[in-house]
Length: 284
Length: 193
Image (cartoon, rainbow over all chains, first blue to last red; front, top):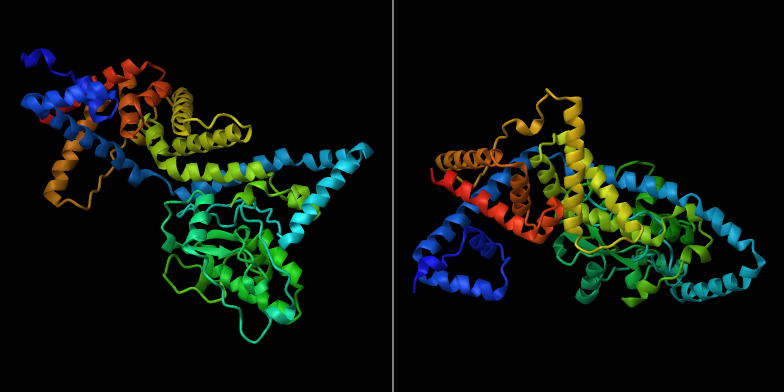
């Protein structure tokens, strides 16, 4: 065989390295490489140089890129501003629509259907924007389309009994489902708590619509939320706060609720740590 | 699980103020954009810096890229190959910004031209020195290449497929392959020295 006539070009070798060749051609070239030391050496050199270049290319930015969390916050703020601007007009349109008598029967039907579904477990609404934590990519507040919150009918006596309710950890299958719905399948589970949006201590259920992946490592983390849950539970049981209000505030935006009930703009210091592997408190 | 997709507009039933909430598609888009930001921001940033932008301008370009993505997804445009889309928009905006900057500050060198300290803690000092020298040689060789070849090489280093590179740079698949082979051949020659 006259090998020199069949030596692959550099372009073909590189395409082979990059997985850009169709299988029949790739097989032919691999067969050639098995028999040709010269081309094998060329390929090895090419891979070595390509690797060195890739490292050289990637290295500088590690030292020069600004903090991603600041950029992310800026982006989120800009998106929210755009969204606010574009959504400001639709309540007006909605009101106009409801002013047309012909639409009332349809509207009544929609409301009745919705009411039935809501009654099923009194799912609450979280209108908050899906703020995402910088480091983990986890939402700081849940996505309301996935986790509107859900509660069961409970009495104050039930939730204020002598011992605090122990929050059951969701099953691994449910936890996986929650991660999947939040597109966080590959996220390290030890860094998140699949948490109840409305804690069982305030009547929240184990319904998946009340569960979301909450980071242990962000500033507004699962431990911080625990503190709010304990505080609201105490206020409710001391009859200083209406249960429904507590549920609703928690479901609407737990970070805003924290700020409101603790009178602070940031988490209390001892709860704003990074990942610290602390054991979760029993009432989530 | 499937119940979530069918969630009714509960805020209507509960009488929630409409302007207090994002529309549901927007909530999902907002979250999606942030996830994509976390996945691609560093790579896009690195790429726009390789096009000669300063860090400051690069930051602005990346913001604009993801805001464009937000608008793109919000109006229901194609989700096909968003990675290629992101690199293409970054490429275009970065070149536009570079052109604008060159017109404004023709004589001011950008930050990218400053030497950047390279750190690889896995290597001992001798290895690190040799490695740094090799990297410098390769990067110098790149600077001598035609700009289009540099783009192709950088995009390949970012893991883009040839068809994605072709889309970003605006050349044919064959031209991408030839450009990369030509650049690689030059790099190998420099690397041998």
